[in-house]
Length: 208
Image 1 (cartoon, rainbow, N blue to C red):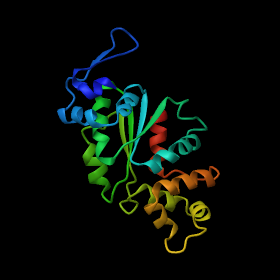
Image 2: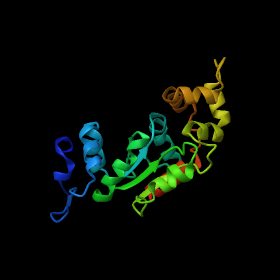
Image 3: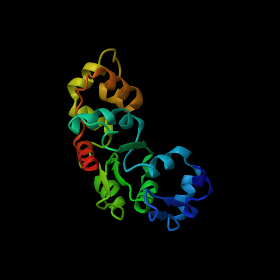
Image 4: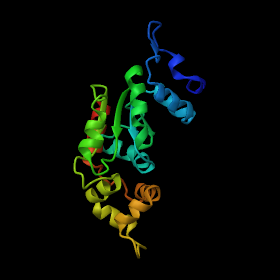
């Protein structure tokens, strides 16, 4: 936590074995600057993890543990040594710069924002490797997590979130109240939600 404020490029990371010493001297300057300003615990959590899922928002963060258990034969995130960090969409590459040096297996789970090829394939071409995967819905019409979630679970979403809706449709409510909607679904769905396919693929990849 102290090192991230001073400059990660001057830090040495020590592994479990004496010979496991990792230097971040080649970390891009803008990435080092980013972590000087980012919340202290994020870089610490990442550095101490074996596997990480980076998700784009609070809604995904709220539901990912439920999804993980359902789509990994009942295993929990903890049992699978997977840590979840919610980051802004523009911050993914900063963590992937760290992943390169620290050799942390990392799955990016993000929205395609209407341009899957540009935002999710071309933008991460230099990062994707056996240790880094980027997962998003390939259908540009399914541009956000909420649209994907509703499209794949219309019955459950209508049942849990429909009562009391007067002006907004359930999907519009989910888009405008992302955190609240995710919490209500977590509490009221009874484990019946199915994760969008790209999240299922991310879970299978990171759990392997």
